[in-house]
Length: 373
Figure 1 (cartoon, one colour):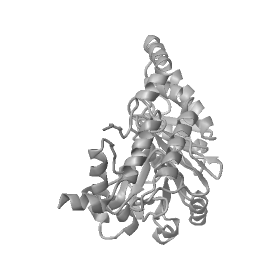
Figure 2 (figure 1 turned 30 degrees about the horizontal axis):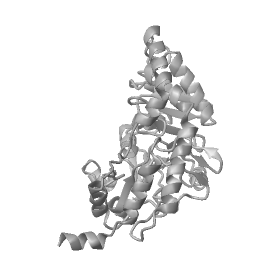
Figure 3 (figure 1 turned 90 degrees about the vertical axis):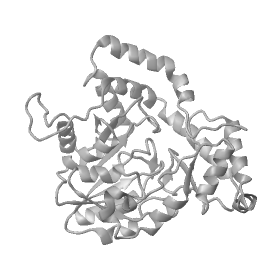
Figure 4 (figure 1 turned 120 degrees about the horizontal axis):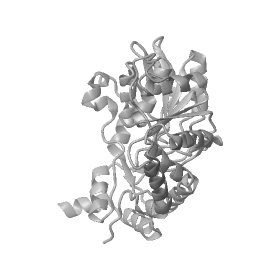
């Protein structure tokens, strides 16, 4: 029996080892570890990659969203709309900024924000919409931006899972007033620790985000606001500079694996993910859905295939957000109960991909239940 990991950094890190170690040595010998030239180089390179003017490095993806909200002056008494199907960080960032998250349900085809449900949630307290670019593809940004313009709202991309994705041939990171990225190690563009950034074309926002992230100061010891410490450190920026050069290549590899899955998984019990016609997907996650999700996950584990659930408990059912539990979000709940993410990473062998496909194609919940009796 084979053992197929859900993710494996080994193939990419082996490929980039010489470049990574060269950068480590350079930063180490330079003895400058915070706010150095590597951070500046990455901020400039990533802003250019996203077809935007400004990139501000920060500590992680959650703080990137929080800093963006604060930079727009959004806080206590304000409401921010976000999809009910997302990682909890999307909502936590709103709470940390002092605002209130207002959930909208997902739609079933792409597991993204149901844009037809947004307008009914807009009130005079609404200040922004967070568009979660989940799994590696973008929401219907034209419709979201149209609504935002109608009600004078800010739009923020939560782009933590969509580095390099396209919407109508435009890069994620350039589709709204600002975008927040995570560079958690498992992301398509991942550091070797925690890291994140804010990308925008808004010069005023860029200045305010940088200020908030640096103890509330642009000039040292001159603190204009009650800020925080959220910085992209020099070493992580150096590693990201290396990985950014290979991002399009690694995304193309993921796309090839996804195409193999989509073309060859053929099981009536399995619902395959879809790609919106406006999108070029980068497949941070390849999630299938099935009514017997736990049974499928155990079957795959018994056959040496590791999987992850993204995400098993929707935000409105989390204890941390029990105040949101009064409203039902049926699609988000159904996704949480049925979704299962298959192995997806740069360097997966063709044998491993074929093994995952063949194993899933042989899956039968009825046969397993009969054997359990």
